Image 1 (cartoon, one colour):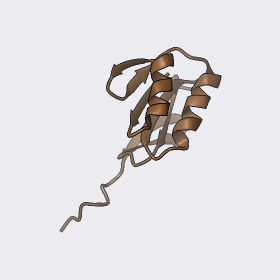
Image 2: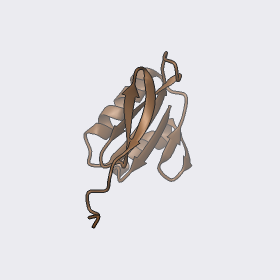
Image 3: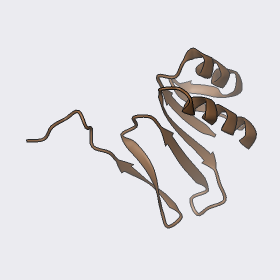
Image 4: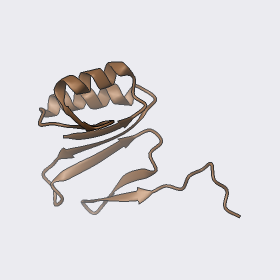
Length: 95
């Protein structure tokens, strides 16, 4: 399982550091059970942070993507295939 987290409270990042390997600031990787992964993801959903989670799945790609917060990248399902759509930055006005 892979988590990319920005702006999460220390309570969440501390838990992730105990269970996963932080390979780069905010990027956590590890082989954990689905139950632990869901518990971590549920704690992320309760805070005001940005996060992306990638976990293995029995589909064509072999993984699923979930996102939370103000990510510019948004995972979408296209007939069973995960794609990533880029959202426009709402703060920028184009003339």
